[in-house]
Length: 170
Image 1: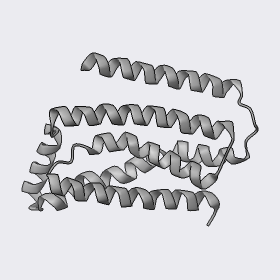
Image 2: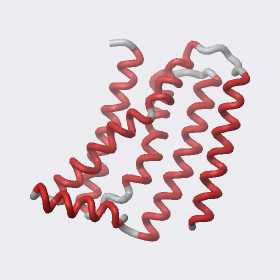
Image 3: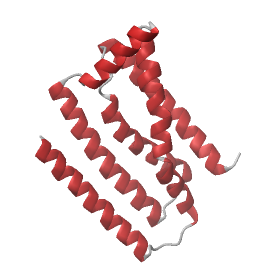
């Protein structure tokens, strides 16, 4: 197995472990809504997992890790505060109730199969570019080019727009 495939396999296994722990917590509190906050934080975990495994000190890897962490932590904190303040998301309650009624599943099984085990692969796939980017940076040159600088500026502007937009919605 190549280094990249091993990195991705370990990241996916770790993500599944965390998802199962979160599912157990959701069963205890009978609320799955916090998965939205974990989605953003999960990307941070996957990026850090890739960085730890790749061991890259390249500037490319540090930029990817830093931008992912900034974006993910900001959004995770925002969504956690919203969840704590507003409680269960009615959309999830409707999805769970409808699925439990039609499939005759328990709440725990419904939460696992319709929320947590569907979120895990989607989160992993969505985060593939940063995981692969960090891994590929291990052999990168010391500096960054104009395209990377433009990308960093665009990402920072995007994060600022999201922050302002979330503040306006609140």
